[in-house]
Image (cartoon, rainbow, N blue to C red; front, side):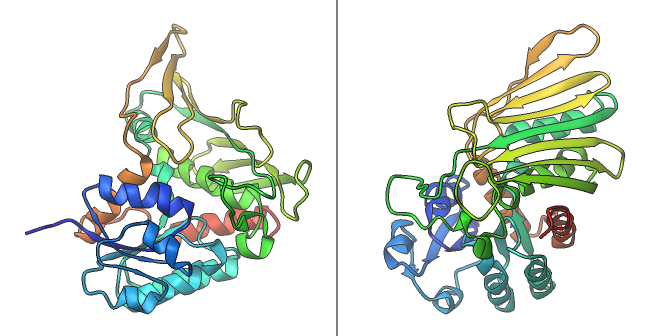
Length: 328
């Protein structure tokens, strides 16, 4: 019997096309139904059974065992509610919603249905190795986490040169700019790496380069429940050819430095710096598997009963922390 989890995807833009659909197939699962208001976008995902513009048609397919929601942020709450009402497990792109109110509504609507927020960077193989090293005591006492995560996102940004709806710079649809779009990854990742979530956070934002009504850069400073200091710089105004993706975990025995692992693709590098000898050692990891693929595997395992370790209540708490600090 085929035990591959059968997926439906709602929202067939570039993230679904370039990352989610390939990940479903790479994970050994099946993409059964694709749904988008643009029928050509749905068809482009090449679903096995149905490309549709109708969510009810997707949910009526008896083969669909899990749904991935990859639509603009302001639509998440209603879509998750509809999928959960149908009793289908749902994995929804981050952030949860454009507002705290809608995020709370999403979590309430999910109820007892298996539901998760799609923070793919939890699953990057380098980040899983970092988490293992931290948990095993290799770094000694962790004192700080430092994150740089940026990109170049002008108002007319497009992922592939074709016409594109850049909803990320519309405050009503996105809930903010670089802070709302990029910072949730770091806020989530701190807890995923340390098993110790942020509890206090301060934010400063800027609108300095791009002429749109959301921030194009932000800095964050916070502390975890266990006393680890966290600093981060996120940006829509860092040129892509500049260094812009770096993660450092500082401990009393060693420091881990990951370069170009924060993002949606496989690869990057991970280096350990010894605090006593000063020796730098490159740490090998699976540099070919996409974090999206690992995420699909993990949620598929949860659909099969293995459990999902990141409850929406925790995701909501961090969403509230970030949006409160950012003044939303």
